Every structure is written in C-alpha cells, then in structure tokens.
Length: 126
Image (cartoon, rainbow, N blue to C red; front, side):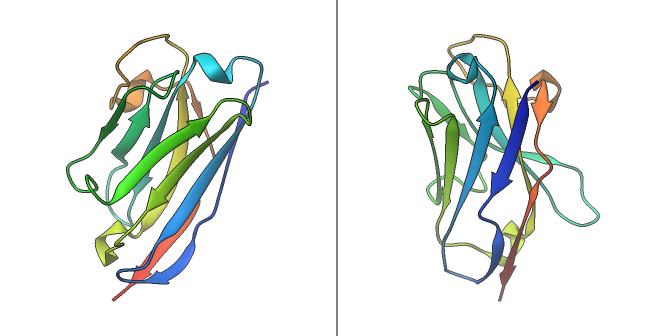
C-alpha cells in the first residue's frame, strides 16, 4: 500500500525558509513523478512544483519560481521542497502527490496524480 507522509511545515516570518519532506512508502518510488500542491483557506488547490522520476526535470508554478527548489532522493524514498523567501501568500496546506505514469516531463495537472498525502500546514506571518 502506498503512503505519502509530509513533514516540515510550521510557522515562519516573511523572508524566512522552510524545508518540507515527503516520505514515500512503496516499492516503485523511483519510477514516479512527485509533485507538491497547496491549498489556501477559501481557495482551490493549486499546483506548486513537480519532479520527474529521475530528478532530471522539474517544473514550478510562476508564483514560486526562483524561490522554491524541489529535489528527490530515490535511495531514501523522499522528496524535499526547499522554500526560501517565503511570503504571506505562501500560507497554505501543502500536499505531496505521486503520479504513477512513467513520463519524462512532470505534470502540473492535479488529476494525473494517483496518491496523496494528508498535508502539512505552512503559515507565513508578515
């Protein structure tokens, strides 16, 4: 059974950094595209970033480009989301997701992801 467990969320001030982790349990982590989405209060869930199975390609939402960095360690079945220069508008619940399709280009489409974590809260105060 596949499980995704996020960690690393918390309360920080604007301009500070956080690193989120997503630990995957399952045998084929290294074949999956991994993505992060977020949902702010009263808003729909939105794409943040994704990385393909090899780690060779990443995509970012324009709102986080240049501030967030996604990486993966297939030996540890973990992806890491380094978030720098955080802004109050980054406040949201952050969800990790896994896409089983073996593609070169990671997708930003929520419907393409097969497994989801429970989410971790990130709050950025001004």
